[in-house]
Length: 294
Image (cartoon, rainbow, N blue to C red; front, side, top):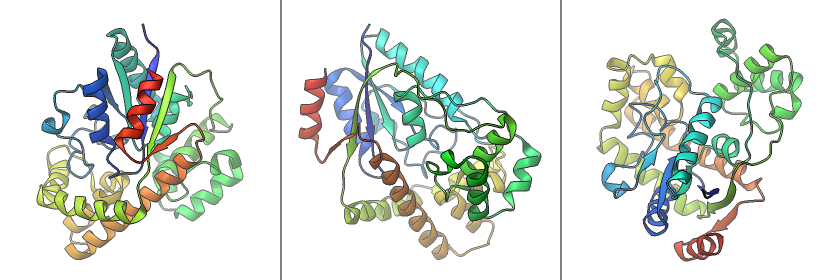
């Protein structure tokens, strides 16, 4: 059985999914999603989930597997991802780990084992009223190491890190384990200007494809609370605010696009710290690396 794993990473709207499908067609691959929003059922349009037509018959895994009313932890993701990757390898295919959620990627590639801590709802309600700055300061005081790696603007992750520290009374940062896979990490490099143009165009396409109706359906059909939709973040938060008549449509559009651009910047900050990633600008560069790897 082969032990190969190819990870394709980069910011949102950089073209990871299309590149992965091209590779999978040529190298007998199957795609394992590493996206912390696409993992939820009912979250497709606003998360730019690949369509059946775009999949071109290539198997895609770990999409639409989680209940959107409940946060899905990196611990659960890693268990699912490892089992899926092993199954792909047993079929003598190449698993392609594709996505922009850095914590998911690192957990799988570097075999990081995070503590299993159940949600503490009373603590979460208490922390929810604090600003991200106050949450970050609190995390610094109890786990300085984790505060150096966390996205200090991500309220959900700040709360989770504090929650884990409260339960375990020790640092969140998992110990480095021996990697399970022989991994090749490819990062898509794209100019800031081109990326911002793609983000704007894609968000307007989301609206045309029914993103507002999707969020309303999350609330009505999947029984996802407005507070939980806020926690899902990015454009889902601002569309939810608009559907509650808290902001205008134009404000929703502007805030959504801004939040996605900021998210893309945070993704790049995360990935640029990883010296194992080989950055590519086109398919030919990636093809050469894959050929040498396989």
